[in-house]
Image (cartoon, rainbow, N blue to C red; front, side, top):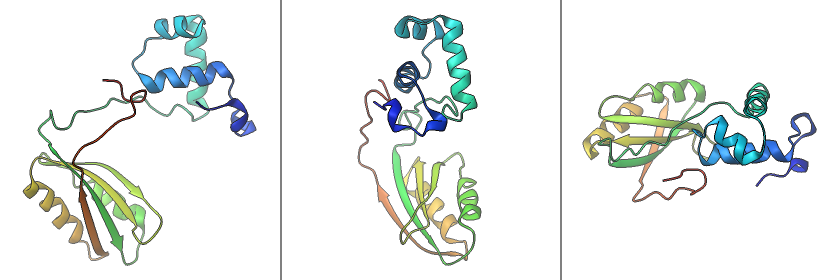
Length: 162
């Protein structure tokens, strides 16, 4: 768990803030009532801390974990993309726009090293994945791609409860 002293002074958090973040990472849908019991705080105090963490830019959103295979997207691929020139942010946005009913581009990361982007894609079939790859390669700025298929995924149990 994070320690208060390891954070920059401008964003100094106390032990209760860190426990609150830990509980929300375990389950972002935990109610304020349950958090108040766990943290021994009133519900208004929990909500005030959450709002303060949002204002500080530490809590930036609340999300869900999707079982993509159960949705009919059994293929998970990571695509490395190299561009010859141009703005990587523009390429990232154009790759994100490739999502459709057959393949979902979940994430695009700008990375360091010989590659420019790392793309996470869920697809219904290998043909649907190939269509996404073809669309990425159609950009005249893309000089190379490399694709890795994930065979399984393990998630941190406290960050993604079953």
